[in-house]
Length: 216
Image (cartoon, rainbow, N blue to C red; front, side, top):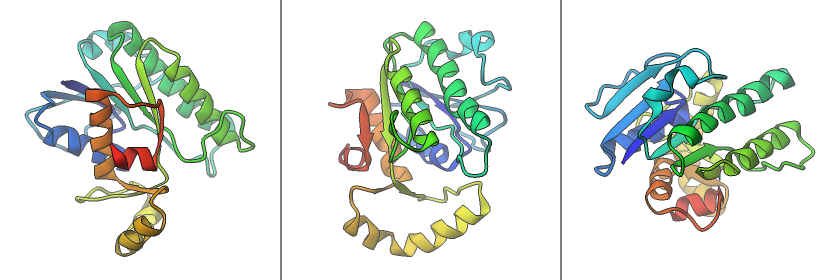
């Protein structure tokens, strides 16, 4: 299996990339981003691309892959609404649409989030909900992952400084949190392995929360 990872330098993307490189069924990984991942592995190839609204110029580099794990995302906190929508919706659909053309029927996993609702009161929830809907409507095997709290493992770190402090504290509490709130917690390891499971075998539903992610 050959896979593409978008956002491999973010916390989720780091964890997903790690699991892809460890999986013996994965023969090649293409990491698409604006810079390098800092990871060296015989399976891994980097593709530096600046314009995330248009991938037509690199469509040939994206051809021949079985799955794409789209882990690129930003928080809506403190961000102008149009900028948030541009990054969340426009970037995701630009990637998904070109992959639907060059790899029709391949798996596309979009990392959304708990609370996503296309008809919700919060703008971010509606934007992510519309993104999910439009990805799933494409001629791909489209899935939306809606994790709640994600605990980073194996040296994976958030790029946001205050998030790193939060996760450092949560690391000690995670065993308790995962028992008390099993439907709202997961780890970067479980997330990456669940994406690979979906790419290999599919899933009974197209939108998966933490319970379904952890079960996979």
